[in-house]
Image (cartoon, rainbow over all chains, first blue to last red):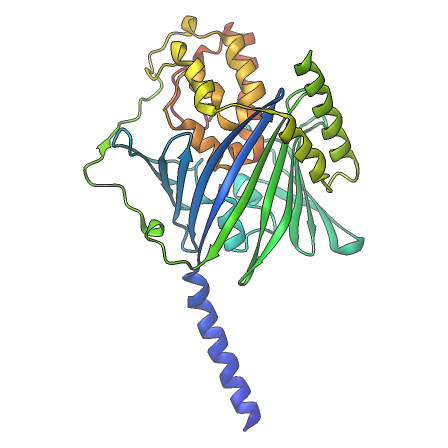
Length: 235
Length: 138
């Protein structure tokens, strides 16, 4: 009798976990600071991410801007100040690039690198739950090598390395937040090495992270009276 | 002089932060770099480019200073400033920012390389002027 109850409970838990995960929504505020040559610029945004892949990003500075996207690369950019909207379908711009979406959907084992043509070539385990993975891509237009380091299965470091072995970009994922059934780094710091002596630092700090909040912005739709702006095509 | 000193401090801090076991970051060093930097608004930077900002796809190569475009990418590529200088959609800075500074810094870096190549092959970055695509070299 106890065994039958346990099995029924397990089945129920599995059934509920599936649809519950699919309905998960996460919102967060983010501040992006970029430092170069002694100057820092700051951009603030709010992100509304649904596990079904719909992502709404609201920029408050330097201007109010809404970007709606999905994993298929369908993007709408709405500028309320001009009441105009740009709509495009482009493989290059997809939710797979959004950090919150990657962590919400648990796709952090390779940080979406497979989607960009990178293949795992080696994996080395070190002390303290550290795993160092090396990826490689031979596709044109890609930085050929990537190193991803995880600690207790969470990414902590990602580096792009050019064909000459020079590191061109490093990203650190720190100050992890423990949220219902997933983790999110509250701080992402990137250093891009433009030359052997100079670099640009970009730091994204997430705050006010909420899981399954009640906000209409998750379902934001571009107003019907927004003017559709055609894209200029390069000749 | 102050700028040179700030730049030297920043480079030293970054080196310290990055070399001590590459995958560990000294957050306090990065905090110091940010705190010591002078705050500027992205719109003020873009405002300075108003005199040369174009959204017309037929922009001719001669109206854009190629060296300036490359320098802008060099320094502010993470938020797509160089794209605005060369002429693109008004919201391009948002795409660079929302894609985690151009897919973790990769897109601005490749932008930099292809602009150098264009400068060598064509004598200017004109081939990328007015390009409205996120991946201008795609």
